[in-house]
Image 1 (cartoon, rainbow, N blue to C red):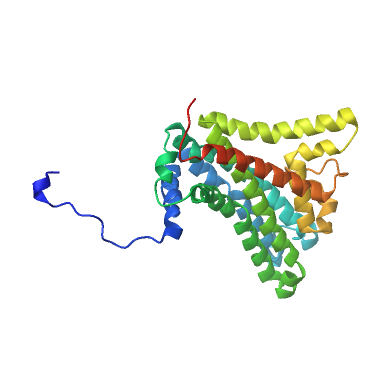
Image 2 (cartoon, rainbow, N blue to C red; image 1 turned 90 degrees about the vertical axis):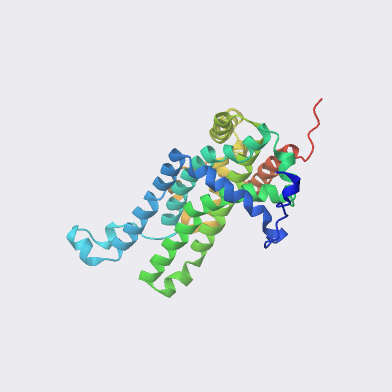
Length: 299
């Protein structure tokens, strides 16, 4: 622009409060994810199981429909802690696939193109950058786990009455807290691998290797050393232990109802499972902190 025209002037419109400026990151990240047709199709497929569960709850309280199908309420599965444990197990495994295929595109392009210093030169900190990227997965996985889970709980409460909701309020707490524990674990791993492994496909593969490899490694230790402490290296075991504790002792009798989260090596105390999850998330955040730097020193 020629100087003599003097038509350039600075922006004088309303400014977003500094506290919320980092939300520009998830806004544009969602725009990029929307272009991934395969991920979008799979995300829509993930709501098939909640719809099946909604239909099941409706059928369980519709006598005319049960008579039409020559069934009775006793033949239907009881909507209890085990029912919601199965629901959460299926949805959380689907959430794992969404995190594995959607997570690598969060930080890897910024690291590969040396864009981290440009981001951090804007008016938000490293913590806000991480929160902005993490909120993308947190929102997607929430829509798949605790949001439909609580809607199912409210639907059953609508049919069974307020007394059922009060007596089973622990189920709602278990769905909410159990979902968030899994969301935090998945988000920390996805962001860490996305920051350190610049190739998207390899970053996705790392999540599968860690998840299934930890299960095999923990089982091998249990068999070779004749112990149960190797299960602490199995993410499926420690997540299953945490979930059983959140849903109460009623779900423990049907522990294998959590489809993808078996409870092997029951000899490990509950506090060790919480400790392993904290160490796993802390290690991932430590790796992420090494990469999210305003200045990169190249030797």
